[in-house]
Image (cartoon, rainbow, N blue to C red; front, side):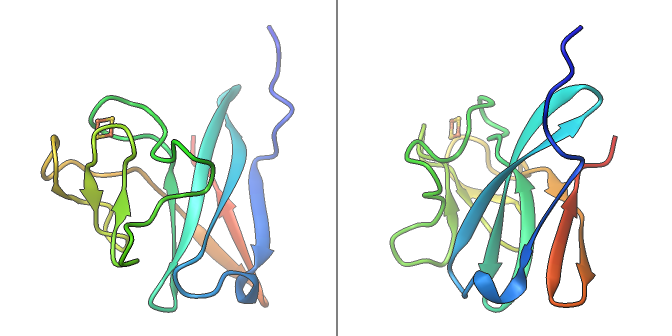
Length: 118
Ligand code: FES
């Protein structure tokens, strides 16, 4: 069996992500690669698995493009589902009430450390 060459946690400096900005990363969970992203929403960071609960595609058709034009929400590029950046709940689109999968964020000084529970 191939073992993914991905880390079990990902870190970045919190200050590197200004409000409205996002960053993507890849982690390993149970021998599989999990793609994720982190968003700074109004000064608070939230990390999500990059998988739409509607049809399972990544949200970003264009790499690292997760936000609506007004910057208030997350959007899935496949069918246009709109998500709250802080709760991950789908507010509009084909899967209302469904949620993105949250990834835990810990602080290590000025760094964000994101992991992927098994
Ligand atoms: S796959 Fe995201 S809205 Fe359909």
